[in-house]
Length: 92
Length: 92
Image (cartoon, rainbow over all chains, first blue to last red; front, side, top):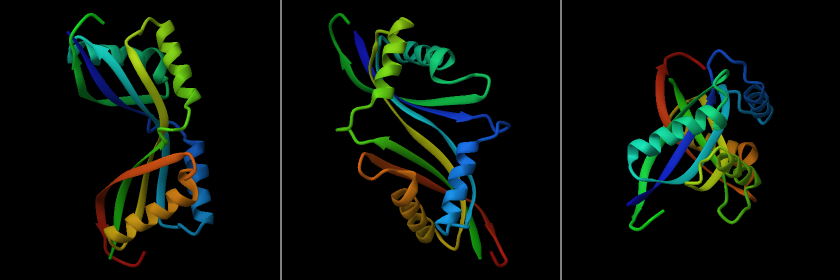
């Protein structure tokens, strides 16, 4: 049996890494009059649906996808939420 | 009294809008051997700390920041989570 999962993946720069995009957005917000913004960090938000036999396999898949492609392990951290969307009978 | 809030903002393309970046990532994952990925959509994840007198004002600020700058209302949707980080006495 195959199960469909939805993953919400958050890729963020490590705290020690400078974030020029975030700094630029913060100064843009300041120009719009928002002086009350203390910090702004920008990352990637990825919504992905995948088919897997069980949750453990889905999590392993996501870990290796993030390590290999979705996040740069040198400068980025990632975390994800995983929910079961629908279970499908029959061969994948 | 001023309160510090942390906002987690999710900016995603509207479902009707094509997502070339997501499609490219999905085909990249396929080349890595992940044929079990059914869909992939990529958006922005913004972590922002701001000072506001109360939650209602903080939410209003975030709405206008998103409308004016952080999200393109024509092709993107946004939503955010807001948590109180610390309350500060004294003048902002």
